[in-house]
Amino acid sequence: MQLQDPQMPIMEHLIELRNRLTWSVLALFVTFGICYYFVEDIYGFLVRPLAQAMGPGSDRRMIYTALTEVFFTYVKVSFFAACFISTPVVLGQIWAFVAPGLYKNERKAFYPFLFATPILFFLGGAMVYYFIMPLAWKFFLSFESTGSQTGLAIQLEAKVGEYLSLVMKLIFAFGLSFQLPVLLTLMARAGLVTSQGLAKKRKYAVVITFIVAAVMTPPDLISQIGLAVPIMLLYEISIIMARISERKRAASMQEDDLDDDGEQNHDDDVNAQSAAAASAGNMDDSTSDETGDDTSSNTQKPSESSDSRRSGDDDEDDFNNAR
Image (cartoon, rainbow, N blue to C red; front, side, top):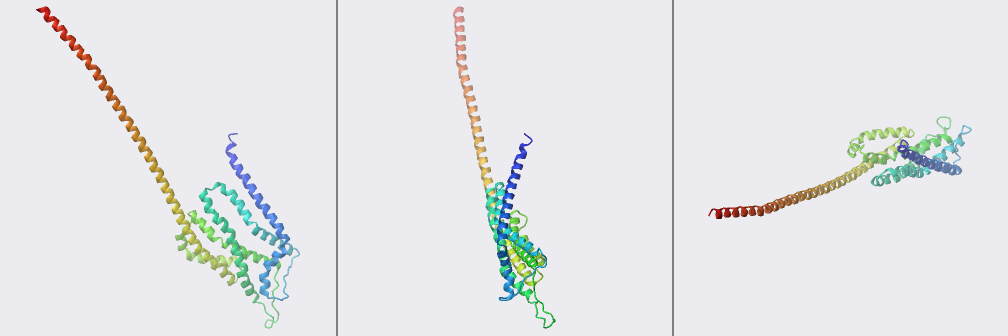
């Protein structure tokens, strides 16, 4: 039993982790079922930017070439929407698992990031849906022609699966890119990066940003610039947040130093008081010893005087006998 006692907290943590994962997966499956029931409405919402770019009253359509393409497309749409909707529940379960192991000040420090993460992801998705997609789809549709010059008309007939993959890629790219302030601010709180270092490496960040935007977006300037410019703005916001976190950390460290100095001064006062009490006790002991010596000397003096009187009486008797 002594060998198993140290393993009990680990088992309890594993059981707690299993319960949190179970609730997260259950929330994902429940939202997946609900989203699959409304999958046509969700897919219609995702297709709306392309339909608006094609123009009202057009008889345009989307096609699929594989027999199971539409079914798996609906499954992907449902899973995508379920992940987006169940994110607060998953983050809440993660926080419930991590929070008991944090101090009170650490919990207060993590609260803003816990709420900022889904909000920033939603803002990234909203930006790509309402701003990037309409511009990008109009750009791609501008390559259509009536065939007056080429002899054959060029007309878009988008596939269902390809369109969904492109939309999901854009939304995830912008949503993850909008998490940059959260990531850099947490790294600044941990001391891994500094605001001065981020400011000095700004020129490298610009190059890396445009490379990432070129990889994560379709091969058009509108999507690349539309992703690169917000990332650079978020990078500047991250520098400001890093400076604020550094000031807060410096203030907290100064308060801790003041508390330590106060405790040290209190300990010194206690030690001084104990030393004064000890010295006072030693003085009392020495005083009592001196008083005892004086008393003993006083007690010895009467005995000496009595001896001298006896010797004087004996001398007087000897003188009388001699006479």
